[in-house]
Length: 80
Length: 80
Image 1 (tube, one colour):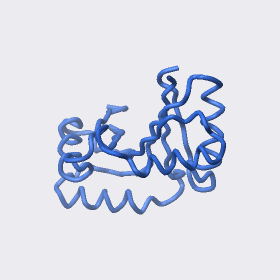
Image 2 (cartoon, one colour):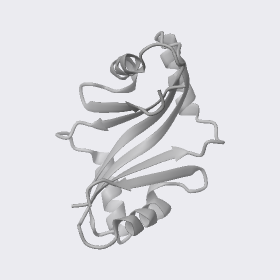
Image 3 (cartoon, chains in turn purple, yellow):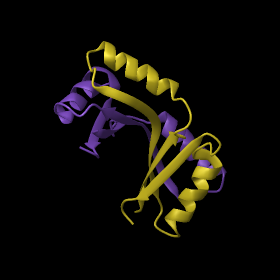
Image 4 (tube, one colour):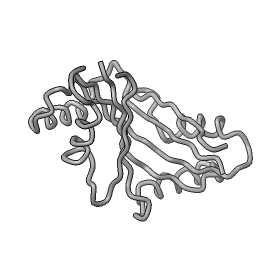
């Protein structure tokens, strides 16, 4: 059964407020070496084994999973 | 500069309500082939180049990034 991993992150030009908050918290905990943190979503999706998983994933990301205006996404099919 | 990717997901035995909701939405959009969806967090962390990034990442996950009671995590250092 094809299994896909989808990674969705804010576009690099946008300020990642959540990531900045995590970075500050890490600094306060003593992790001074952290230079930047960016937060995204990670999805593991199992698909039935018929059809083209890449085309399906592209459509899913465009229609529901990501907001293409502010987010970028990538995916990989790990078990075709 | 070392760059790390951290993946945090619910432990497999726990019901992923958010993932189930996304799965239902995908089915309603016509993506009937989706068998399961699990949602997690994805972080990209840049570290200053001194010290052992793996030890630092392990400590960060334990202390702040993940909840080890209900979540599992893994990380990779992509650019040492």
